[in-house]
Amino acid sequence: MQTFSNAAAGAIVLSLAERIIENRAYLSEIDGKIGDGDHGVNMAKGFGMAAERLKGKDASLSDALDTLGTLLMTEIGGSMGPLYGVMFTEFAEKLQGVEAVDAKTYSAMLHAGLDGIQEIGSAKVGDKTLIDTLVPAVKAFDTATAAGKSFSEALDALVEAAEAGRDSTIHLVAKIGRASRLGERSLGVLDAGATSCAIILKELSLGARALLQ
Image (cartoon, rainbow, N blue to C red; front, side, top):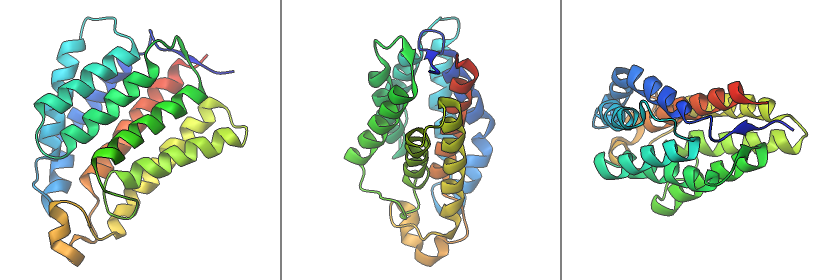
């Protein structure tokens, strides 16, 4: 059975911060078409602060995720700080005390993050939000493992579904948040939250897959 070490995986969060910072301008550009235009800036600020706090420390994945989640909840404004903050702290809680992370634990982590977001937000699939990325990604991971696929293969399925979910938001009318005021004019544009969520899920999954034994 494939697993990866929680203790050895904290650097995944540093890689995650790098990807978000790399995409700062892109995420803000997307957001500027139907939103406030500050998504990339806010995300890069929060993830950058977490990276600074984690650099030089040999943190476990659970501790690194907790640091990131707490910073996002306390330091970042807008709607995304609390949503992602809750997601990452829920991820961290599910991994706390776990030495070897297997596919079952990873699934439990994903579900905890999704549940946390859904408890504080009202968005559902089709509303043009990060939920359009996260829900199909979690389902794809579970479907793959239920079909007997390996942890590695399930992570590949998760990434593919996350990116398909992100792309689906081009064809959706926003029903939540500032973009919802635009109605039909929100068509034809990717949702910034769905896009950042796809980046996050891909980087987490690539990092986990690289450590699988």
